[in-house]
Length: 197
Image (cartoon, rainbow, N blue to C red):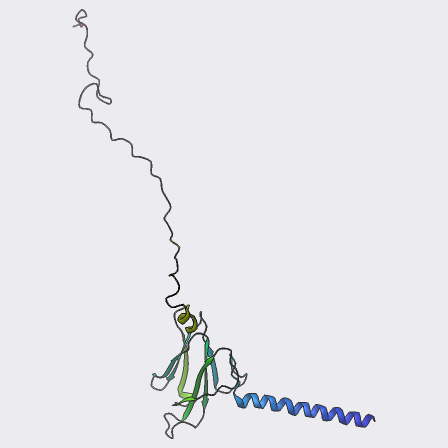
C-alpha cells in the first residue's frame, strides 16, 4: 500500500505541474497584457493612461530621427504594443512588425492586437513616452458632463487690507503776523508808556 500512495502522490503532482504549465502557456498565447509587461524579454509594452498621467507614445527611427508612428492614449485606456521580428517588409528598412491595440484599462486577457505597421529593426527604433497636460478627464466623464455643470468657482485671493493713517496737515506758511508759526510781531505799547531811547 505505501508504494501505491507514493505513485499516487507522484501522479497527482505531475498532473498538477502539467495543468499549471498549460494554464501559463494558454495565458501567454492568448495575450496576457498587464502593466509592467510579462516579466520577461518579449518586446511587449503596456502604457496605461490616467488623469494625472495621460500618455502619448511615439516610435522613432533612430537612424534618421524620423517620427515613425504616434498615438495619444485616452485616459482610462491602455495601449498594448508588441513587436514581431521578420514579419514586416522584405527590405532592411522595416523588417519587423509592430502590432498594437487600445483597450479598457481593466482588460488584461484576450486582447487582439488587430492594428499593425512595418517598423525598423530593434536596433534602430525607440519608443518614447510623453505625458500630456494634466489633469485630463476620461472621455466618458467629459461626454456626460458637457454643458450640465456650472463652471468651477475659483477661489479669489484678496490682498490684505492696509490702513494708512491720514497725512499730517500741511504747514501753514507764515505770511501774516499773529498766525501760528509766524515770527513774533512787536507788541504795541500803550500811549502812556514811552520807550527808553
